[in-house]
Length: 393
Ligand code: LMG
Ligand code: NDP
Ligand code: PMR
Image (cartoon, rainbow, N blue to C red; front, side, top):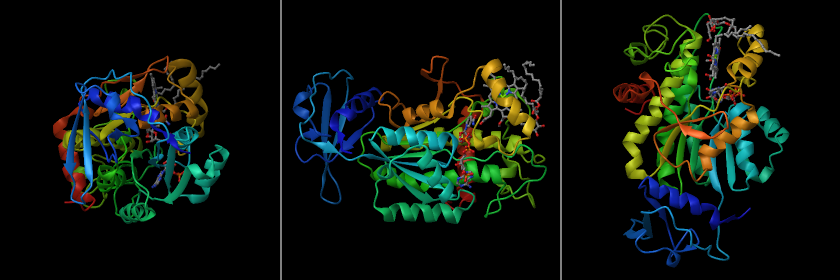
């Protein structure tokens, strides 16, 4: 379905709030099908740059957000946005894929390790065939991550938004298990697999001409020790990263980031801290130059997803009512999916470096991360050690 340029208008404007550059390749003096003649010159600066391929790229920097007189350029239409969602076979990822597909403005690449499960999920969510593509990705294998990136490039689809959503949680495991590359499975999948994926796909995001390019990494309250939930033992703590630096292999190094004894629940929470630190490090390194929005979020407690499949049956029985009636932090998959979809495409959520949460009325707000999850020095170290582990440095 064609996308009307009007859909992008608020995006273009709110970008200006961040002083962010947006780019387009206008054939005439229009920006995404909107005649530039409608903008007052005081509010837009157009810098024309000649690119290496000879094309002219206009960088429009809006300086005021209140351009209400702009009109849509009649017949002009735009392509759909293309979003990759990892772990879209169930839970939050599937619900977000559904919410995005339903808008008709997005083509969702469902990046999953289980094709049939994903296909069934998409069907039962009522997703129309033309709105999604399933592509194989096993985050517990760096080869698979590289293969996925190749396949995506070969598909010829642009990449406008990447959502790092997949995760495993192994709270009852007594012993660590490992990825194909020998990393403890939860940090290996949730953090290192996504780290390589997002580093490689940054290039593709840079090349996209979409008005609001985003890289989203799903975080969680349980990794934040400035909250009650983050204080339920075992608490997240990356320590001095000695286990991560040793490769998390459980042989000549600990399977835990902090070098301590294996604890599956802690490994998950640690992985979420890495996710939130990585988002901020991306922001510091690349936001200004690329205009890409980097964001993380806590979508609420989606107590009925597959995330808890490894937990004891009693937990799975009590956890949903506990969250619904006691903490009141419960959110349905559908509602959580809409929240993630907002972070993907809502024109008002273009601010970069933010950890989004939602209040009781389901309104989004910029949340505060814990001290460790916002420690810039630790973020840099996690980045540098992770680079080595995934073969980027
Ligand atoms: C650890 O166990 C593991 O050791 C570790 O390996 C790892 O798996 C980790 O984070 C994962 O879990 C931790 C956990 C096990 O223990 C704790 O969290 C310690 C406290 C446990 C105490 C549980 C019971 C009391 C709950 C009180 C909550 C405070 C509010 C008061 C409420 C009073 C309620 C009567 O714990 C569990 O697995 C238990 C799971 C926790 C869910 C709590 C459920 C409790 C409440 C049940 C209420 C249900 C419904 C009410 C709805 C009404 C419906 C009309
Ligand atoms: P689900 O278990 O429903 O979804 C997790 C997804 O990750 C599944 O699609 C799963 O695929 C996929 N996955 C796991 N391992 C791999 C792998 N090696 N390669 C590719 N995909 C993989 O859980 P949720 O929807 O709850 O979790 C989604 C995100 O939300 C996670 O990042 C989680 O940390 C976060 N979150 C969840 C909360 C909650 O309350 N549920 C709260 C806060 C954050 P498969 O189907 O093949 O197993
Ligand atoms: Mg928690 C406001 C209170 C709150 C919220 C929002 C969550 C979210 N939890 C809260 C409170 C509590 N939890 C309390 C008081 C307890 C002690 C009974 C408690 C326990 C608890 C356990 C055992 N909670 C858990 C577990 C898990 O195994 C889950 C976990 O830690 O996964 C890593 C979990 C969660 N609580 C949450 C959320 C969102 C989770 C799981 C999902 C996640 O972080 O991704």
